[in-house]
Length: 66
Image 1 (spheres, rainbow, N blue to C red):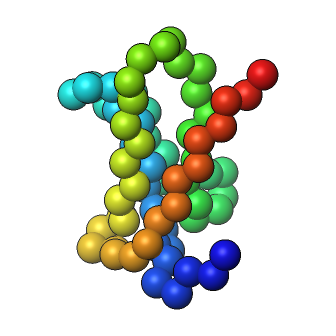
Image 2 (cartoon, rainbow, N blue to C red):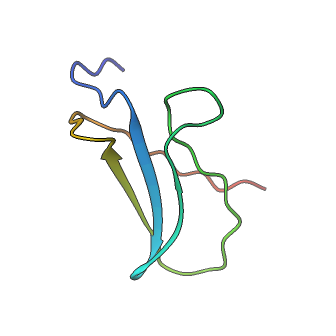
């Protein structure tokens, strides 16, 4: 997939209601954001933001791991 206006340095946040569970700005030494979490059943929100005033298109993928 080619995205022309990608969000170059995303920040990923995981929320449950009004509580922020975790956030990630850089995954190891890469500017990508990723979260690996074990969560109890419930409703969650994933929020992607640019750091600083950065704008662009972000992509969120969610996987259920065995």
